[in-house]
View (cartoon, rainbow, N blue to C red):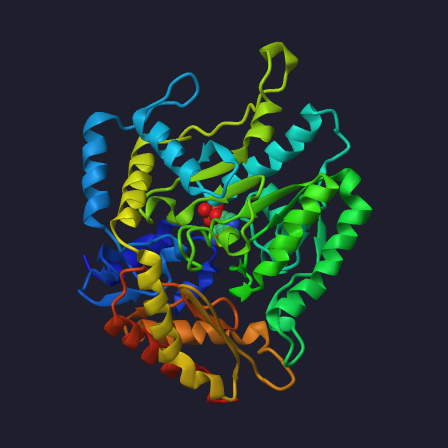
Length: 450
Ligand code: PMP
């Protein structure tokens, strides 16, 4: 069957995520037949470099032989079993390893099967903790403007991006949103650290006013990914950790996009030397092979739930596939690959090549900023760079880059006016060269009419 056949059948029955389906009247779907390493291949042999790691999930390339072998072996032993009343080797071993790897103090693992659910777990756990310790008035959350924490109603509510949130506003709980430390908005010449710390005043004020009614502050550490890979300084998190402790409020780190080495350290929180009270992981957790998510909690949180059944304090939250053995085996294999070499050192070199590859764009009249944190590089396009006027969303400039790159065999998926790459860690220097060329052409092509 051809690409066209698969595309037609897909459009007839599959409701694709995050998509205006009518777009596909003119924008062909890309049916993928197979994948290997950083490459995807369609049904007619055309290849695409997966420069965004399939929605930021893939770490070591598609169908990594070690993950494939571990998965096959696991399939021979145990496919799935419920995790209430039962346990299994992959989930035990994975939990031990995650606690050893995570920032200090996170000692308990609660599993779900997607990032949004991991966020729901963290929000519910924090709220429930305060209830269990006799502070039921703590029932609100503080979140950052432009944050993204997922699509389920709780996660969407704490998210700050209007594009995803506004339609559902009547259904959402009301968090306290504070201005973001996002350094794209700093004054010309202002240092990142100074700006992020200046923005912390909003957070401090919100905590002073609301701590009595607030369970937790939730943040994406260092990179507000869905907002367009907007970045801020680690000093903000350090200040936030200290303030959360002082005000008696939990800190939830949503490391779903930035965990597992993306920012150049295993977890982005490490840049600030802090430990959150709750940490959400997913995406890279299985190396991009199977859905799995985990919320790590401190012993103090765990203990507030630990009591006689009649006390009614248990965390009665579950998902059918909680801690699925196959997904846990893929996660274990992924952690084993991390142990095989110093990926962070290698990524520093690859990150440098990514930067060098596109650096000429810093002089481009429609490039407002190029920013990078480890294996995330983002190029912010603007109509007027001096005045920081963005291109109107309706012009869909990013879509033009997407189409151009597809033609050239590269999968990019810009976020509005932000073209970014976030490739698997196994991308070669030559492939980075290709990526950079296509991005430069794509930006030129997209901005040539002003
Ligand atoms: N939090 C962050 C920071 C994310 O980037 C995402 C996904 N883009 C989520 C939560 C939600 O994860 P999922 O899509 O697996 O529900």
